[in-house]
Image (tube, rainbow, N blue to C red; front, top):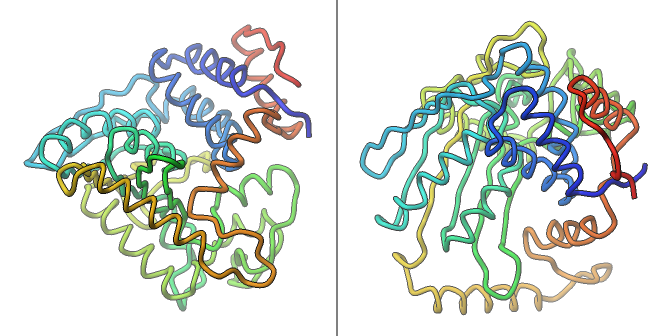
Length: 349
């Protein structure tokens, strides 16, 4: 697949979003988050998502300029996302919570009436730059079968943790509660590729390697009943506690007949200086990372990586080599650009 310049893809995405009616500042956030995902190798949450976001905004199923309402209750920010793009809603909520966390030592966010908000690692990096540990989670349309069932009930419900570091990239844990993110299956179906056995079941509850059959069925939770239990806890925190939709009531952005998604997000921000001096924290993190990477290696392992390290290495590599896009994704972008008379040039390396 050909490679494309990251900054030019950001510029193109911004122009497309602005043409649809998204304010420039919000368009910049969405474009940056999408391309960041591609740079980190998470293409299922990257620029390939722009076409579906654009379509739903043109259909008025997602608001281009949402009225986002934030209400404070103690250390909790209760956010109504106004049915806006999830990246915009989450970014504004995090920005509002950072001063509160710095003042009080801890802040929490409960978001309702939002949409898919991309990779949680994007928001982890924002918080880490402010000396804040971030714990974030979101629910999503039904994708996981409960243990013992054959029909999807829970979302793939990602959870993430971001820990600042001084001499190395942040330690970031960002994972879905499914064996594989549903976005990877969506991308595989779009590109006509098979998926590994053990990722998903078809509508009859049978293991399948057909990505399209998997989208008609369900994704399997990681770790069996343990993944199912964690997905349940996240559903309660993000859907039930926030006032958002939960379980089968969360609408799927890829369903042409669905109503607004009403996705829920929950975040916890811990301002490290309230817990311990930053110098001491950084020293302990450095010791932790050094000892972790020095642990005895298995015979076939060349190195022990801490969570988020390989993601950052991919980011550096892709930043210099360019982002690979399939012909289908590129055609979708060109069609969107043509719709608004946006010139497409100097993208391919």
